[in-house]
Length: 309
Image (cartoon, rainbow, N blue to C red; front, side, top):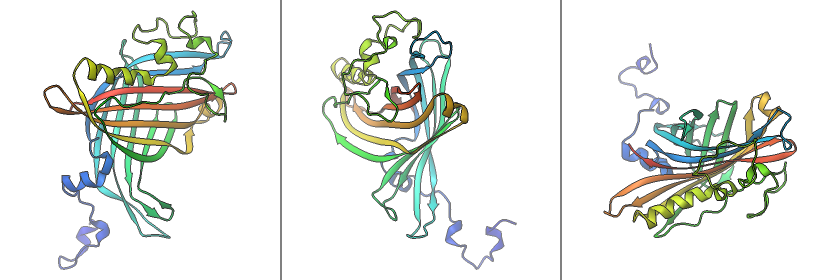
């Protein structure tokens, strides 16, 4: 006999059992800045990662892997509230979406990445005293699990927005990333220098500018849309998060290429085409740090996806 059946018909069931999904409008409102995510997104991107090279032949102990990407992300609404019970403040209700991010090589089609996870919309709290926030939780089959926490930024645009550079220059573990424009001392990152410790052949679309700053791909996409296709960027909602308390890794990763930091910006863009039709576009840039050989090596991934369904 289930819990609902254990109550007489004349007795009202406790509120804690009322987990039925509310109306679509109410759910969208409770998702806040996440409301436009549910659906199927598809697009392309670029990934740069300096991974350890155990062969002993690499002077710097790294291999620079460069990939053009084909990506899909499917977001599904968590319709019912998720209650976090309070001990020093009242309970809070969290709403969110689950997602599955699949990435394959944009040229050869091979599998590169799969990531199930969730985005959460978290209300303001008094204990701890904090404003409303968002969180992204994800798991990676390499043996990583992360939780990033952050905030939402809204903007209205009639032009291409400024996108700050993404650093790809390695730096000392626990040190500060170098200033934008700093020269990269690793020859693997310089396309003018032949290297057997870099993806070969480098896809023609990948330029030195993209290796120096992968966010250049996002700017190029927007500039092409505006200048050549006559599109207008109307509105942007940015989901900005970073790791809270680090990343949980299996022992192999901790020992060989410890990964403790992840920062990302996911920008939900409302775009208008030349005929006045609106569509949704998702641009993201994220940087994870792989720590080995005394250095932090930025693993930068960027992408542009269109909401197809």
